[in-house]
Length: 295
Figure 1: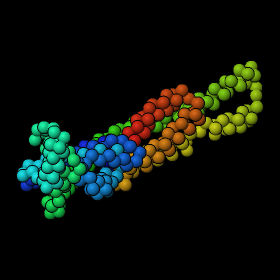
Figure 2 (figure 1 turned 30 degrees about the vertical axis):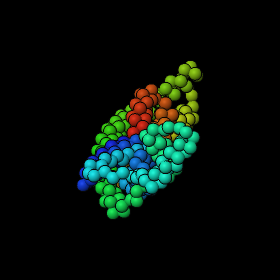
Figure 3 (figure 1 turned 180 degrees about the horizontal axis):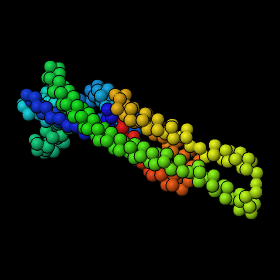
Figure 4 (figure 1 turned 60 degrees about the vertical axis):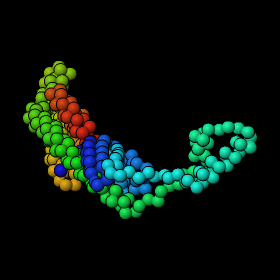
């Protein structure tokens, strides 16, 4: 089963004091390219988040964002160092009085609060942090699962398109096989007519003509190319329907298909077959373009 690299998933999980929203968006990329947007509170968890995304999303450009909102009692992260700020206020007032200056108390307090170490960080609660992260992990898992489901759905759509393109090429190949039966007698007749026109009569070495004809028939023969092309088309569908299917492998098979189509076009020397080859190439380009979106 195929999976597309295009996907989107989001999830919101509510805890006792926390609501977490996670969004995961994936796009085409040759490699795995992860961009994480995490709140500062969870910045130390970025490596863990990247590891989880790598294991489950495998390939593509991944944009991950996490937002959270406190819903219960909010505790400030910084508290005023009252003892130190009080000392700053006392010193500032004494300095102002010594300079015979009158400074409003509000201005003194504002200046004191701007001094070094006026605030101290509140010691985090390890248990509360663990509970918060547990909620975040639930949201991350749900968002990734939704994104993966989206990718599978898109992959199923790609399978339908690939089957359609391969069937079109197969139909054109069948028409080429029908035309090929008429092509060689037509080549033989063109060569005979050219020889007759060149010599002005039919009095020429027919044995030598047949030898030359065999040479050109072998040169124009596309039997092997038709067989290989048919095998590649069957193999493409077989690989597409396996669990190990991936965009790189399908692209390699598409290149082999293109090689046989090009050889048929160059050896056929037939206008009808050339038109069919152009149509086959058009379908093949669609396949190559779509394989770039498969994981």
